Image 1: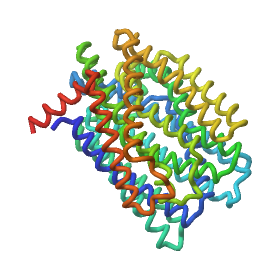
Image 2: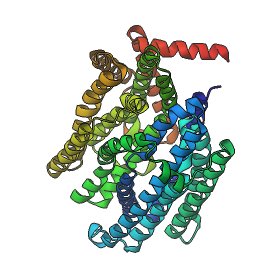
Image 3: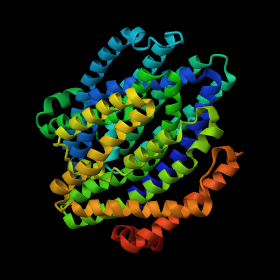
Image 4: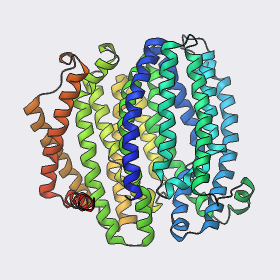
Length: 507
């Protein structure tokens, strides 16, 4: 069994468990601590994500820089590159600490609409900031596991401990008299435990790695590609932050923490789906990097087409199920009072589909193509500007529309062109045609499935068993119809099918 398959199997196993446990945890949070504290928790998380922008994309640049020395078994260069990362991360951690202190001084102004005691905001922020700083000061060496296609070992540690953490937090919320205090204490304890466990797994797999901040400072000029790629990646990270993290802050500016929490419920579902699929496909990225390092362009193009088809089918299946049964899930989970209107919900589904189909992003990362810094700047301006403007007139619907417009312009149009022009070296028109073919195929499948089964009505679903049965029926029929349609006309899905058949025969 190769490492890519191990990455996929371990990720699937843990993400299903964590996803289910996270929903229970959020339900317990709402029941015991209230929807407004949940909204505060979401807002603090987004502020911390803003601080983490100072990471600048160093991790991605280091991962790219490690592909070649790992392929060549160059231990000296590997130690130097990881030491450079450690030295840079130490400086970033100090900067984050300073900015965090300034932000906390501004909390009375930033959170002036907060009806809770202000200590909740400080305690939450300090807890999450502490967890984040551990990653910069200590856990930076784990990057070698990802670059070396051993992501499954990271998953076993991080997700296994996360599962225990969530279970513990649910327990203290329902059973402990200390409530949120105990919830935060468990967050801190497991951050420390995860740090120690990651250090152990890196040492066990690479006992020869001896890194230091001094070595990183002395050799960073030798590995100048890290800094050059980091400068380019900063703009891409900024755009990603604005796309994924500013919406709750804009919603809070125009509405209330309650709507932030309701939106956050849907984002938890969406992020769970995206994280699951991302973890499944993440093990492929280092393999793509190694394939590119070998210089076999025909193989890279074939893998791209296969990966494109596979990911589009997966995105369509989960997005369709989200659209057909998402509101019923929210109704069963936290109650009908927390359901969004159909238009806003449909925008979330479309945005989710587009974010799952980020095939070009994965190949751009493997190629190290980040030089189009104008694109993320334009995307960030478009996204933020339209979200603020349309949000002023149309509230949540306007904010989501701004996000969608920016995705269409840059994710669907620009990035495929940039990848095909500077990476794959083939005309992009074939990509656009296939994309439209996929959309028409999935629309046909959705129409056929809804005609056969009808849409799931949140008011008609009385139990979890009903929801699971109806959702499974829709998923199986939609996926089957979509697969048959794609198999009839798309080589990518046939390549993928042949790969699966060969793997089964070997087993």
